[in-house]
Length: 106
Image (tube, rainbow, N blue to C red; front, top):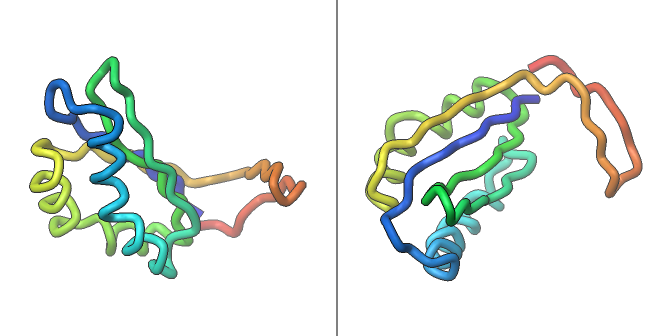
């Protein structure tokens, strides 16, 4: 399991509602992605940042879906370059399911 954090700068003065509208445009595509376990969209109004936290099944899946085409879509939609970091997920606390578990190695 891979945890990826994606950041991008947003246009100056963009509102929460405007960002949410843009996020809604992409949610359906991500909800049908079988390589993605979960995605969390975020917005930092004070720093003009948007982005997401992605939980991927494998590193290969993350690389397949977040290559050059993805980065070009982010630039077209938000007007900035994307910054991505990823990490091997070692331990998960899932309070919804009431579980603590170690996922398989990515």
